[in-house]
Length: 296
Ligand SMILES: Nc1nc2c(ncn2[C@@H]2O[C@H](COP(=O)(O)OP(=O)(O)OP(=O)(O)O)[C@@H](O)[C@H]2O)c(=O)[nH]1
Image 1 (cartoon, rainbow, N blue to C red):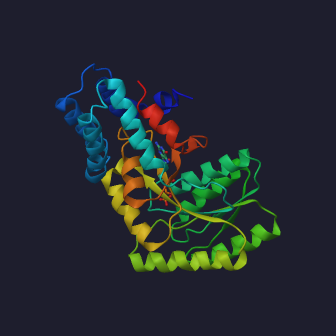
Image 2 (cartoon, rainbow, N blue to C red):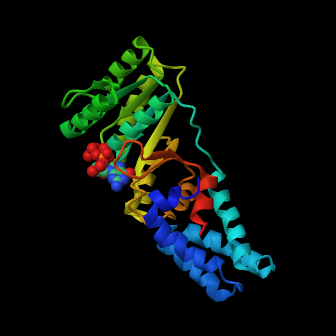
Image 3 (spheres, rainbow, N blue to C red):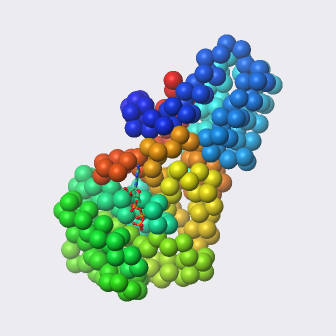
């Protein structure tokens, strides 16, 4: 299990894990160590408020005499980070995946990865290309569906996305599918429009497939750092999000964004995506993430 990080998320390994690992090697912990920890968390996109909560807790434990060595520091930090991530965990028992996120965040690529992931679990998958604004996005998904031999329902240019979703739901019922993956348009609209569109789509799904479990997942480009948090806030205020997909984790050295998003928005990370190949995706596991992040 360990080395997944080293191999696939080498940027995080080089920037975060190695730096923080140096602190754990010290025999004596002092104020300088705590200042350095704070600096590493901030420069890793953990965000000011989340970093403060983590560092305050560490300072308290230090004052109480519970942190004397680098190993103690690692143990307390691990506990604190896992606490943030496990407050709210993702329920992966899902029938319908509604993917939202802005253009370029890796939504379509993830739709393909998710199809592949579910197919591997012997699920019969139906894809719905509900982005009726960008022909290129539909073409991209069409190619992925063909490559994976997965069925797809495609909307026409300018068609109401909710009507494409309607067709997708009909086909899902007729074809006895297990999983429905809906790729929506990636425009960053005004909050009101976004809200209206997503509510219309969800209403259509609920009406036709009332017994099925829907998960609304937001793709976030982890390389955008703190800006990704602002995007997530807009989507979070527009609809109920069940999970976050952090994409392009192979390109960032800043693994702290995971903690900032989870704590500030109280939404669990559902998947991480770390490359352009279809199998470069993983259900997020908080324990494993923290253990690997702090292992050196
Ligand atoms: N390195 C890396 N690249 C990725 C990852 N996910 C997606 N990409 C790339 O990021 C670019 C945008 O991904 P898309 O899946 O097209 O993004 P989208 O959100 O669907 O955007 P539109 O198709 O424009 O709606 C593409 O070049 C992908 O190959 C990832 O996890 N790692």
